[in-house]
Amino acid sequence: TLKFNAISNRGTVTGGAGFIGSHTVVELLEAGHHVTVIDDCSNTAPPARVGGIPPSLERVQQIVGPLMAKRLKFVLGDVTDPQDLDFAFGLKKKHAVIHFAGLKAVGESKEKPLSYYRVNQGGSVALLEAMERANCTNIIFSSSATVYQPAKTIDDLPLSEDSPTGGTTNPYARSKLHVEEILADACVANSNLSVVNLRYFNPVGAHESGLIGEDPRGIPNNLMPYVSQVAIGRRPHLNVFGSDYQTHDGTGMRDYIHVVDLAKGHLAAMRRFNSHTKSRGFESYNLGTGQGTSVLELVKAFREASGKEIPTVFTERRAGDVAWLWCAPNKALKDLDWKATRDISDMCRDMWRFQFRSMNPSGYVTDNSEERE
Ligand code: WQD
Image 1 (cartoon, rainbow, N blue to C red):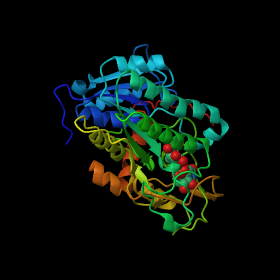
Image 2: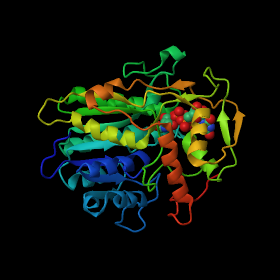
Image 3: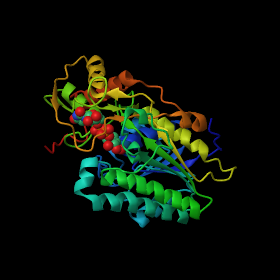
């Protein structure tokens, strides 16, 4: 277990008001950490009042309870702005940074590549420079399995951390790979810098309380939130993008990982920042279950979890989609003593509880009720 000193560790979490960030903040607080979140709230509801905290973090405080809630600080700020970053670092000496803040929609990145490069690369460079000023040398980076070269045959799976990267087909994926390279270069220039680079496969689901979860603005790009909105009656049917892939049922296969397992993976990654040993430099870890699940298998699991019908319509493949994507998560088990424990039915059950609660009048109103069709 992580050894805490009396005041425990203090961390800065960029983008901590978002889907994966908020779930990670729950785990950090429950493990005894003090956390400062900096988030511009461009992809989640902002604080209701000046000086307040975003609704997603209010619900994090509800989950962890009043004692741990006091250990959470929030800065409404821009990760590309050195002053905002210095303010977030200035509150107290930080042991480590977890960097989630960034733009993450594949399709949008093709329309706005400069925004993606300015925020994802520019924000990461600004953050590294702020860390230097604050003498903070530990960072966990939120990377993505899309940095890997698309598998040509099913024999290329599962992907390990040494699988070839590059050949990616969109600015979002390119920005993630480039930030990895920036971090690796920064480690070469500064032997005290430690980077744990986490490559997420497909994060889905929600906290078991049903208070926080994936609640995209407008029409969901990703499968799980779309299926969930069909189940609750917000969408008429699911379009299945392609049924002619070389898989057992013709639909695309992915390594879906429960967002709470993913959040716990960040806590486990903190173990690599042991101040008593020399920095290990730049290290990458796949965070996935090692299990491939097809679109139709996920739809079936969601039907069972929700008890709702999920009408499906088969359409053309989506441009840029790969047939298969799943990992071998052995390295994270060996080095971080971490493995995913929740299966696809847990993911569907927890997503459904969150969806139902956020749409149900007796629950709370969802943050992103406005619709951008
Ligand atoms: C999963 C499967 C689709 C929607 C993306 C990003 C990746 C990461 C996770 C940020 C595929 C099929 C989907 C729908 C469908 N995001 N699908 N109908 O594309 O694997 O990964 O999200 O880090 O970077 O690329 O996830 O959920 O969009 O798709 O049939 O309405 O579901 O074809 O096979 P993807 P996804």
